[in-house]
Image (cartoon, rainbow, N blue to C red; front, side):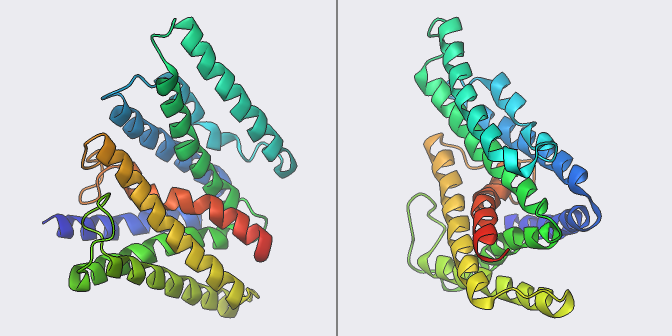
Length: 271
């Protein structure tokens, strides 16, 4: 039953994502990312507050950051981000002082991690989409690498998976992880063929192939990273928002870690 729900949710979710990416503009993308960021932050905070006291108000305020990315010039983004991270550290320690240690170092460390992990990584989706002229095409590499990996890992893992990969996620097998990496790579290459032949681009297959392999590996690390958080806090899913998949954070765990690597690798070797 869970497998059926997973497939149905995927079939229903894909047209929604496709419509937003194809028909939307940078402002619609940013609003969508803010909604995703807030939901993911809520799921993370809900998980963490079972054992600790995260500074939720700071987390939610930071979750709206993707909405401002296109207001800031590309040249100034890195400077603003660096200043923002330093300011965030000061603000979180100020909370410890104001609350007279009722909020402690572990609480603010988990809050800081959640902001960087969720908001920071999600923001790179906006940055990729915002790449001049080609962003609306290149953002698909993030989802194709993630989904291609998921599909192959799931199908091969169920059929041929015999060797467990890690106790972090006992259902995942070595065979499934290898198949996922190869599957994501194949999807990336096929998409590049489409871009080069239909949209008259000239993307180097060797560079994009290497990038595709890196993205699929990073995506699987993202999956294990989310699983390690859930295992520590002894929960199965971050929420039950998406039938068969769990919460928003369960669904985007690989995508959000792929996004920063996609941005920097594409900027360095493709653009």
